[in-house]
Image (tube, rainbow, N blue to C red; front, side, top):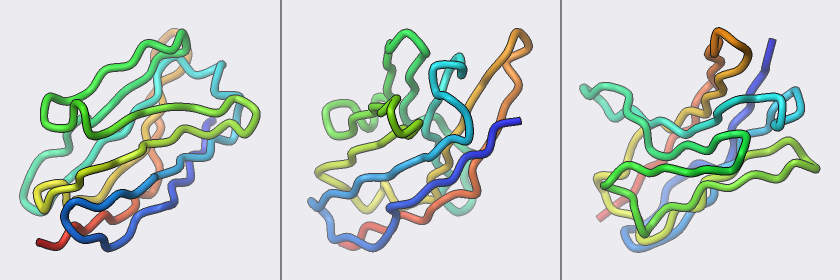
Length: 117
């Protein structure tokens, strides 16, 4: 069982920055993949950025060059640094972890990010 707790969301003006945090209840090196997803009203949840246990990262085209995913093994925490935010980045952001041979999925409760124009 993996528990994930997100924090760091909020209201920011377009062009601003936010950093989201996701604290895991287990060592993040025991997790095969971690990632950030987001879901805007009326839209499907989409992958924003992911990172594997080996450190390989991937990003959605819409956030490349603006968002950076990272992790801190000492604190078992994953981050999403978001810069040059746009109104279309407004969504609930969810932390995800996939672990074990079956890649069991775990989700955080979500944190709201609102970007005003």
